[in-house]
Length: 512
Image (cartoon, rainbow, N blue to C red; front, side, top):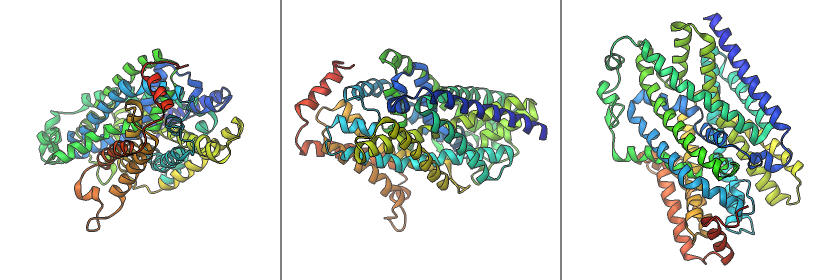
């Protein structure tokens, strides 16, 4: 095993050096703020597709989701079903119109700037509210990625968790700090490819090594309710799935139309022809990735038996499968090291995107948008890099607890961003009557609902989420949507200029 660790370490070292080199190369191409935050709107279809999906899925795809399936059964796949539906809808209905609108809305570089320009917010209220919301929830989201990295290094190399956390955070910080959006997207393309290969190869290789019938092995491992229940979509941990449970899991798909780090990829694609290429690539990637992540949870339970992962270690099922496969069964540690890099890729591809979006919210939207309106591009770039550093440090502090649940952290952040921005993005693109007051009401209502639902013990010392079992994104999205419609109808309609811009986007006129 000691010799295998050396090979795995070599694979990690080569991979990490490669990521940093990309950051250095891309840093030379950043001439202004648009280059740093959107790559000059020059992304190809393939890079945009894999970058969007790799930045979306994070370590959650290779650790959180397989861990949930491993522990509770394929009933947890309802989350994957919801995410697939959300991904398809996002690419088919949101991507093209959002790209057009951000160009028509005075070439907006960030989601907060898009809101400001879309609703002609002269006082920059939307800019401030949305920027603060992004920073708050992305702190938690970034912390989940850093925690996943710490657990990965801890499991593979036996490095103490805090040291492992520090190593992963440092590498992510270096290439994001230097290269900006182009570096993030280029590395995401590499990482998305590596993630998909690992997701496809590892479970198939593990299946070939399982002795006996999978169902019999699952029964022997003590799955709740037996293998039939474990493999059923209507069972969760041996108990029947209720309607609320299914709604809560499928509701994860609602988050897509409000995720700044995904939406910014739509804004950055070179042209609509490339965007059409992106759709097919992204949808196929997501379908395969989500399906095989669930398969990993099931086969991991059978393949690792008689060993059992409990007390939070379930999220390491993919890691343990790779180590056992390529050090004990196939004796190809360098290949195992590359697949473990796939997990690191999933972690890094999300953390870097979240850091960059947070930096753009602070530097471009708050600093140049509100505090120092005459700041030049060089000053904004410097401020963005300082912001990347500060947010990384704060996320690092949140992630210091080795017992942090990756699934729990992602769930909270995903709900907050999806509920705050999803309905506002959706209606801003498809409902002409949406106005400034409605957008403000929607963002505030969505964000506050998630915070109250998940964190305020209002019912006998418990949060509403704990009592009802309903995912905060479902209730937050619904209330935010309702708030936008009601407030927009109760306040003055949009100006003639706003209506003209809306018609231009719908009819693809005056889009440079």
